[in-house]
Image (cartoon, rainbow, N blue to C red; front, side, top):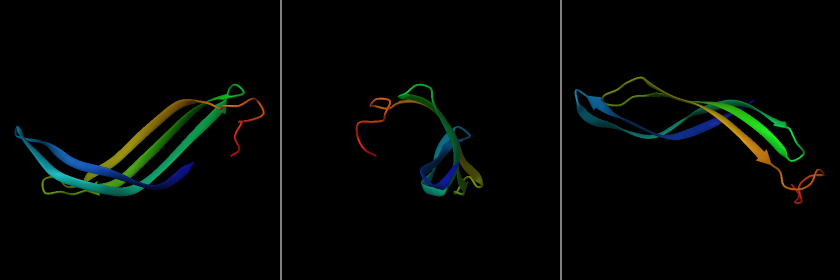
Length: 92
C-alpha cells in the first residue's frame, strides 16, 4: 500500500440555461492512496495491476460550491526485464 501527496490542475466550466461559463480553476493539492500487485510468470516477464484513489477536497467558485474533486485510476501492465535469468546486465 502506498500513500502520499498529490497535485492537479483543476478547472470548472459548464452550461447554465444554454449559456457556457468558465468559473476558473487552478492547482489543487490533496492526497493519494493506492495498492498494487506484481507477479512474475516467466524469468523475465511479470504482470501488474495497481489502483489509486486521489482526493483533492472540495472546490468553491462563484457559481458552484462544494464540488468534490476525486479521481480513481486502475493500471494494468506487463514488464519485461532485460538480461538473463541471473538478473539484468546493468547494476541497480
